Length: 246
Image 1 (cartoon, rainbow, N blue to C red):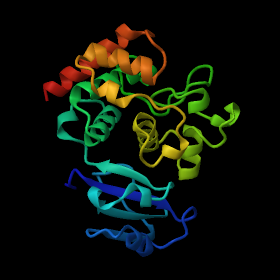
Image 2: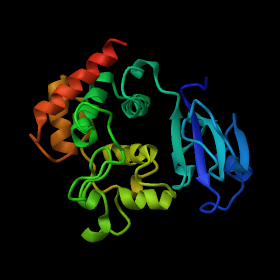
Image 3: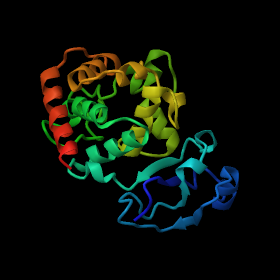
Image 4: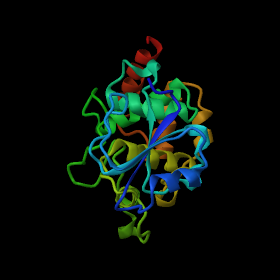
């Protein structure tokens, strides 16, 4: 099994015409395995790699300065943390991502609970491919308006839509949405140049109960204070119970 902190860095040859070796040299990574462009890579640990015509490089997380990774690289942290094995697959990937960013389980459960009401179609897995009936909201968080496509709001090339395009990936890609989410939450990472809204992440982390965390994230990050809050809290409590019982 791959170490928890191992990353796959994937970038399409047509979008980044450099060799895998030169990219490795630019990162100055110590522990690197590189596959040439056109390599067919498959693995049960990743679940995301196929005949992608891409360069695939595994490096230790602490060896890769984010500012040196091109925007059209998608970083996928593997494997899923064992603490989240009882969650739905996309929830487990989101939980692992946030855990690796330093969030505790209560705050992770709060975020998942909020998103389950957005894209989970009830108490089911969050859906990165969800589209609102009126075509306004997109993705697991139902990003909309400026946060989906800034071009219509005087912010050209900002929003999840344009980050995905420049990364050479579909906006429905969960890894794209994880990077975008983190950019909005803390103003850092691969998608930071594309984010429109940032909230007070320190204020969220300062919450001390699941109820408080859900309400804070709903109000300050989602900007929909009070919308179906009981459902979101129920989902968060269910997720938190699964994590604690693992």
